[in-house]
Length: 145
Image (cartoon, rainbow, N blue to C red; front, side, top):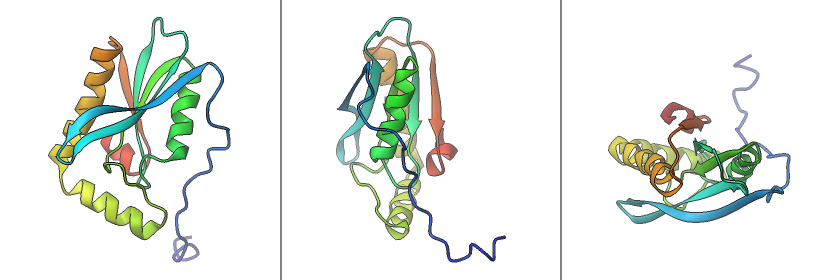
C-alpha cells in the first residue's frame, strides 16, 4: 500500500460544515506572548457559559486555518469552551512543502511550544475560570496534545 501512495500529497480536510455555528460565539484573541510578540488563537464558546469544561485544540501541520476554526465551533456547540492555539505565529500553509517548513521550524523550539500550550491552558483557567480542561490535536498537534 505504501508503494501505491508514494507520490500522494496530503491535503487539508474539508470541514464539511459552515462556520459560525448557531448558539456559538467565536473570536480571534491574544492568549500568549511569544518570542515574536502576541499570539492570537481562536476562542469558541457556547452562548450559555455555565458549567463549562474547556478544550485546547492543536492544529495539524497546516496551521490554524478555517478547518480548525470550524472544529472549534462544532465542539463549542456541544457545550465546551474551545481555544484553538496557533503554534506558527499567524502563518499557515497552503502546500505540503510550506507545512513541512512551518512544522520543522516550530518543532525546533520545544520550550516555546510548551509555553504556548501552557498559556492556552492558563487562559482558559484564568479568563473563563475553568477547572476541567482537555487537549485535542491532529497530526503535528496530536503529538503535542
